[in-house]
Image (cartoon, rainbow, N blue to C red):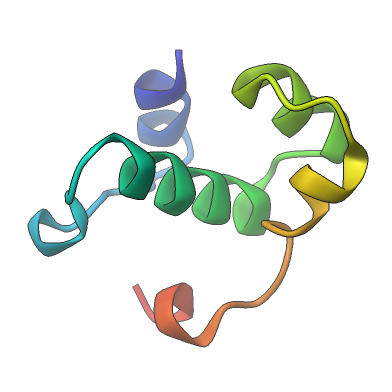
Length: 67
């Protein structure tokens, strides 16, 4: 579901950012949080139990902001 959603909103993960499952989850959550995802949606998609976990990805991140 996450790959399709990311494609739908125009998010592309650069080849140099694919460094394993945890890196994929972090990068995709960051990009979705910046693009369109609500806190509730991130909690659902990533299986988190606390809003703070999702809110950490809903920020402007200098490392990923220009991609």
